[in-house]
Image (tube, rainbow, N blue to C red; front, side, top):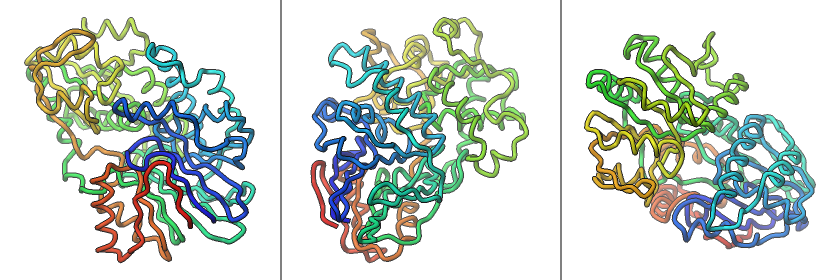
Length: 446
């Protein structure tokens, strides 16, 4: 193994992309994700790729989140002719993620589209499905996918240079094990180098009873005759909410007749995919003899007209809608209808990035702008901070500690505070001294 070039998620959280060069100078790419966030970050998507896609022997994808897969269609423009390796659930999920991304790009009046459906379809034809724990040889490289326990089909990837036998492990995003849906994060025994995420490298998730909080918030609107709004990410978070509400209704902790409107076209499509891959579920979910994502009172509103009709349904009611940070999607028209009412509650179940509407509301802003309208926020606000699908600092340390013979650790997928804090913790508690915080565009010799 000769070197790794850090082409994204190095100095910020998103844009995952790593170019690996073997001892014989052949190359592979791990991830090619979208940069997401403020304008100065998202503008990086429009920069020319810093490598030649036609020279790649192959591409490996850790999972289906947009910040890991969102720029894959750009490979088409660069003449890439190889294979893109991923798990079966990841393939099914990136089809809807990339299609949705192409659609949004076409509707963006400020920029020319990064790519269209033609490029998405060409990328999908290049995919080769791999299974966990089975090795695949691609040119000078041998890769093995391990279950990262993050979302359905997510993987950490071990890459070995078959020439000099050096190994590097890419963590991908590591799960907040034990998760509600997927199997536990799989540990890796040994590696020369580790490239690992540090999204929550500076903190531990709070101890919370997620089911209890969800029950309390639904009971509250049942008693007040109000509306509970839950902005939710389409992959994993939405399915976890449905599964938890399933149990609350089955156990009689919330009223069977309370309607729950599932109002997210992408979330609906993702849930159908989740139902196709039961072998990837954890033990509890596999024990279900019925649909773990359906229950009495669930109303699925895929059509936009049905979504608009939700306002006619009498209270109490629960509305689960995208997007998770309220940066777009159907949650916005529900926010326009209900945020100004004191009988409304809003429950945040995921990270709210700076400058998003979700962050403003969560931080207590009382006057917000939605679609050129100013809205006074009178809704009751609550957050479940522990419902992250990312490992926190203790779990990151435990994962890294399990890997023996590590000579270099590269910390990515974190802001500077998260990376610095985790680097110091690794040096102090694990005794690993060669901990590197790469920046975008840097190459490091191995």
